[in-house]
Length: 291
Image (cartoon, rainbow, N blue to C red):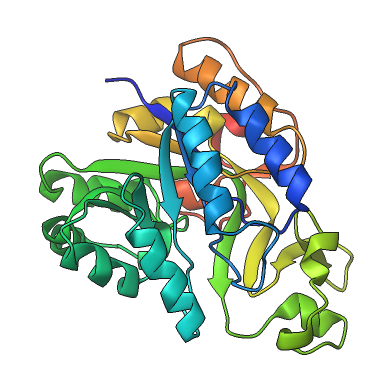
């Protein structure tokens, strides 16, 4: 079976109409699986669960497999209430990004996707989650082909492997909001500054080089991770799904390039990319043919 293409959950805070227009276009693009939901910060309210459910129905009608993604950090009773509503949606599968979601889904016998922030680094952990209902797992972005090769002989029967293949790499999460702090604001009165940075806020080194990207409570890589040139290696490693992370520009071109490569055509993306993690190197490095 050839690899499938997924569009990961939107990591940034975009205006409501921008987000709706983006997903209206996605319905016509060559992607197989679409993840919907706020995974970074519960204060982001341009879209709420009912909006995501409406988008999910439209995308499903367009032939996409739709998965609802949970928050990475549950910090309040209201967050937990929203999580319960998502788990109980009754139609769409759920990507669990923390163990509270796993507990709720497993308790109801609902199959789920084990998200990248569950930090699965060995076959024993994956086997435990598969026994609780995980049918697909997303490798942590910092994991590489060597780890997957070591796990492959012991992968649970029937479980799919998904790899983060394009986008700024999520590196860490914190209860503190770094974007708010940049503007000397408290997290609870942040003025929603994230909405001014559709791809995160770049942090530079003292030498002026791009170093990290701040996205609310999430810290990302400044460089965009790109495994397009590594597709033969990914296929040989048994990867089932390639995840593209939404960007404010050119996401359609990225999806088209990956689809062309999956279909055996020549494809190229120009830019200052990295792919080090997949090769067991520092993430910001560019290794192999891509270099």
